[in-house]
Amino acid sequence: TRANAASAPITAGALSDGTPVPLLANLGKPEAAADAVTQGAEGVGLFRTEFLFLSSTNAPTVDQQRESYRQLLSEFRGKKVVVRALDAGADKPLAFLNDAHEENPALGLRGLRALRANEDILREQLTALAAADADVRADGEGADLWVMAPMVATVEETSYFVGLAREYGIKTAGIMIEVPAAALLADRVLREADFASIGTNDLTQYTMAADRLLGSVSALQDPWHPAVLTLIHTAGRAGAELGKPVGICGEAAADPLLAVVLVGLGATSLSMAPSALADVRAILLQYTLADARRIAEAALAAPDAASARDAARAAATAQK
Ligand code: PEP
Ligand code: MG
Image (cartoon, rainbow, N blue to C red; front, side):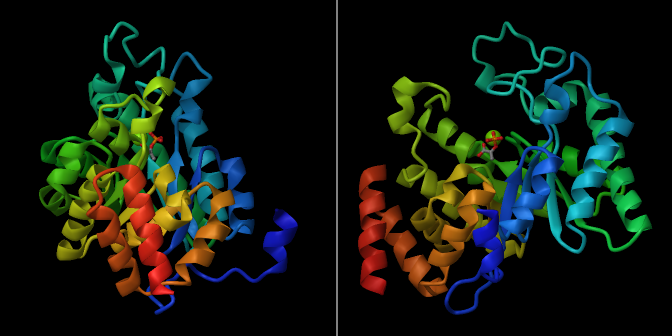
């Protein structure tokens, strides 16, 4: 794939009418950065920091974290890099942070809730991020560092996280929208934050009440479900009204037709596994923003996920 990506010039993500749709990478470790650039990533839309914490029985030191973040940011000088604070719990349990005895870990002390209960870990992470950002700037152009919190459910949690990030000089602080409550109140949440990024994996899990790890309910774990799309639309509209970016960083962005729908619902950037970037870039170039909105409307009006997919496909074919 490296040879293919290198042979064709990679243009910035955009619709056929020129509307920019930055195409970003989801990364789980800094070593994956170079390959993402080769595959055309214009930046990082989700840097999952769990890898730093997973292999140890203790939290990593500030210096260990600082070095990893420095490595990441130095690969993306002049580009946007969205780093997510530690998302521990549920499908990402950490022995030293999470209580193994919760009966419903997906509904328990996870994400920002767990960080708040262990605020020293969050403070160390913000310290390391601010230091790494300064390290990279000390020897050339810096990256555009954005920091966000996982599993935010309330406006108060949003203000808490953004306030803390500001204490460390983080200029752009936001939240993930992956709990339906945050999507429903996106207008109020976004007033407190600089941006939001929609995590469609958890948003689908919580909207459909279907465990993302459980095969027996996987048919319900479908981001095409109009209930999920409606929440994304609510968040997208709130972002547009307030002039704040609302990106997507869940796996849904890697489905090319769904990527068009997401843009039609108001997503301002799409972040995905780097291997999906080329196909999404190609399909976006086939539609205008007005087309994408019409395709999204067709999906929104459907009664279920399968019909939404069919309706979007039919609307997309009619558009060509
Ligand atoms: C999501 O929930 O969609 C997301 C991007 O976060 P994660 O998959 O790491 O929970
Ligand atoms: Mg998530």
